[in-house]
Image (cartoon, rainbow, N blue to C red; front, side, top):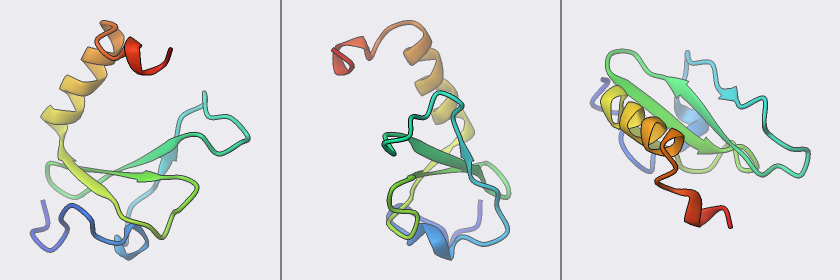
Length: 79
């Protein structure tokens, strides 16, 4: 992962990536977007504020989060 890209970096300053939004995204802007970074990183940003900060995770961290979501570990946050 590019060492100059870290948590809180302005998302719009991350160049050469394609931001992807979930097909489950709704029109009110309640969604996040992700971008694969060179190397092992994944950037996450709020789609309503594409120039705002990005959070950076490793692929393993993102995989653990997605598996936890699939398993229902975070269902309490959607109620």
